[in-house]
Image 1: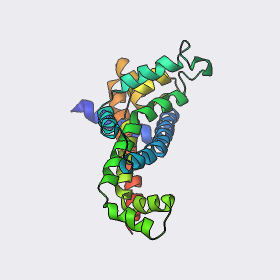
Image 2 (image 1 turned 180 degrees about the vertical axis):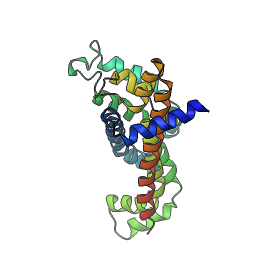
Image 3 (image 1 turned 90 degrees about the vertical axis):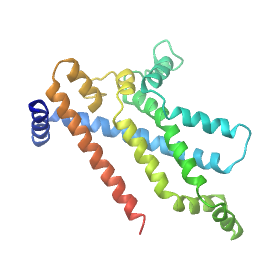
Length: 231
């Protein structure tokens, strides 16, 4: 019990002192996770709409693959991307390894299936009469899509929140592709792993509490705006 209490006190002291290293770690985590979530949403939401509305050969197989990728381990993604961006890889000359860009690429691959799958699920629940009515009234494809977006906005927001939660808490991709460089690619999860390896258990617990606090705050903001859309 003392161990846990010490961790809480350490977290409060770190937050209260506005420790420069802690702020840097939080900023890197938020920057990388927010960027990857934004890119994944821009890719996954349109893909989900297309898959949900279009009939094509292999559609069921594609959906099955997407559902399988929901359980994709972060280490597998890290190894896959590493093989491409390492010095011996196809993208080696771009010098992406151990950069925030590499971390974002890995995280996008991790959460695109999440956003796409949940978008498909949300859109599939909408009565097809919405789309047919919009088309009958003269709406074009973009206007029809916008009508459906308004109907499934809660499901879309939930998929984005889930995707953000997955990447803000992942450690495998950040460690393998980012390298845990201090002040540059060190995130809250990789910092926790480092402190644990060093035997700094109290600080690890403190960072964990900070991570949960930041995630909770971000989710509160997301849910606030989600509630606003209900008006």
